[in-house]
Length: 283
Figure 1 (spheres, helix red, strand yellow):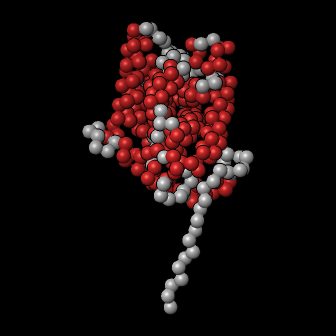
Figure 2: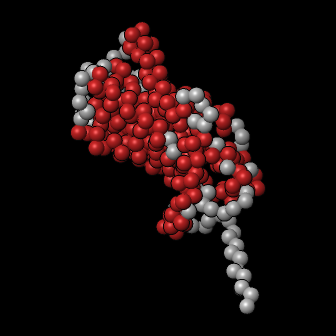
Figure 3: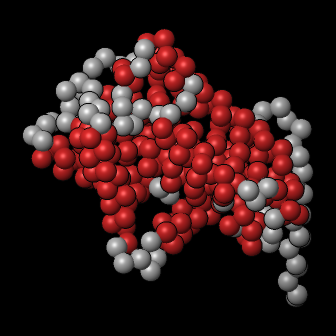
């Protein structure tokens, strides 16, 4: 007897009429493709340092070199002080860890859809997996750079505080913010290829509006609320508090930044889901 051919399954990608940007059905579908997500994450990790002389050491050298430069310019030359009587190199490097992770996520996620055009135009899978993988892969670099932070604690004779247990919360805030911004940028980059040219300017402005080379307490309390509209302010300040264990936690800054980061992610999901059906045609 001849084998009966399996019926073909046709999936039609169309604009969702559901009011929620992400539903349980969407989450179940993404989980069904979790192996693809793991493959994309591992591919991004391997390709990033392929054929480089130093390999993954760049994940350590970049934030460490920036820390040295900022210390020489802002601390030694301009006499910018750290908060809570913490050595300035330790103060800056603690902020550079989540910021470097965030900047890497923006760079990778903004071009993630266009960079996977061959995959998008040939097979169906939840398109959200691509920018999600782009913001998860840099976590490996974050963990490698964190080893240097441990070495700096040993060098300065300090002991990390028990607040370290909440580091995943602030790292999660950075991931949510990067994912939300990445959804906007990756979707816009499909139609407008200006995004890679605008992104360095956006990142630079974002950097100086974030308390990395200075602390939140360097500005007036009334200004801190305005500053917290930048979601990375809560991430940086919270990460410093968790790692250094000094000073009082700025809960108003944390919660406001967390709310903004969630709003950015939800709006990014809404826009991404609204235009994803055009990706294969425009890309």
